[in-house]
Image (tube, rainbow, N blue to C red):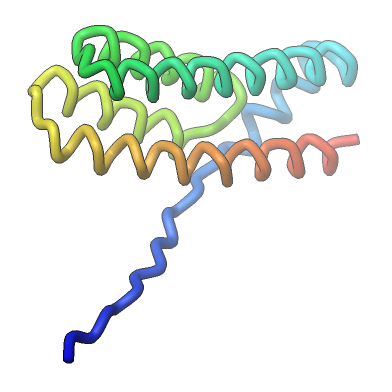
Length: 126
């Protein structure tokens, strides 16, 4: 009889709280909150677009869109998300299909947790 093992994946969420602090210092509370909210909305839209390019096997566009995620993630301190988006772009440029799938799955996991972490960090800066 075969045994099935379940692997629980715990990805490292790396945030740079100083980036959020700098935004709040430079833009004030309302300005920083607006920037963070817009960035998070844009990340959600672009993540869905990256996933759609994966389903369409449009590797050049997937790579381009993943690179676009990097600047947005960096703007609000999502260092880990930016790094993994770069990994997705690199895998897509290399046409390494298994790596694209694996890094894209990791990107989704990190994005979910990173968005929550940034939102929580934003609440702490009040």
